[in-house]
Image 1: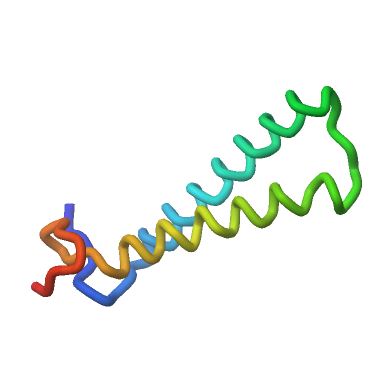
Image 2: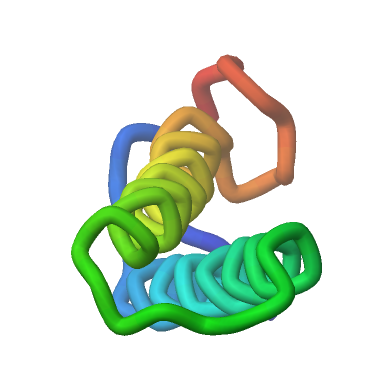
Length: 77
């Protein structure tokens, strides 16, 4: 499987980043639902879910941005 080069992102990276964000949101939602015992439909309830999912997606994309095609972190080609 060909990986994107150092300081570049492929469309596959974006799709995987989106999947990571969705999984992060689901895990945060489940955690909050267990903590509070219910799912509320308020901004206060959903704000941490949104922030965590965006953070997870951005973290994944940054990791891929700084990884070369040989799967080495912070090393040029």
